Amino acid sequence: MKTPVMKHPLRLFTILMAVVLLGTACKKDKKSGFPRTVSIEYKVSSNSGLSTADITFTNESGGLTDVDNASLPFSRTISKTLNEAQAIGLNGSKLVAGHLKLEIIVDGKSVVAQDFTQSPVISAIVQHTFY
Image 1 (cartoon, rainbow, N blue to C red):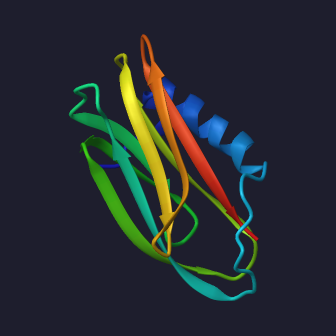
Image 2 (tube, rainbow, N blue to C red; image 1 turned 135 degrees about the horizontal axis):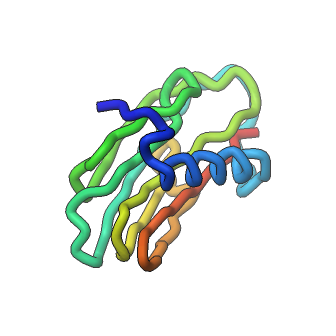
């Protein structure tokens, strides 16, 4: 179910952070050239007992998809056609302390994976830029 961003202040903060991070480069792809189609898998898990999290990820059209109270571990695979350089992002948050691992896999290869442990709430974001 999609939820307006303003009802979740933590989600607003993480989306604003996503915009900032998406403006910076992380890793460059070895494979370049456009257009091309890639398979993107988004994964979110926890080793601290969290059973759900609010997740936002870049979808096929370049917009954001929200999954509220997604069961963990979470995995979603999309196919995306790249016509130019662009960035994708993955966000996970929960209004409690805990641990989240976020990972983006492109064409079967992990391009970014990061663990986050925060208190009193957890808000995590990773991004990848295609060149």
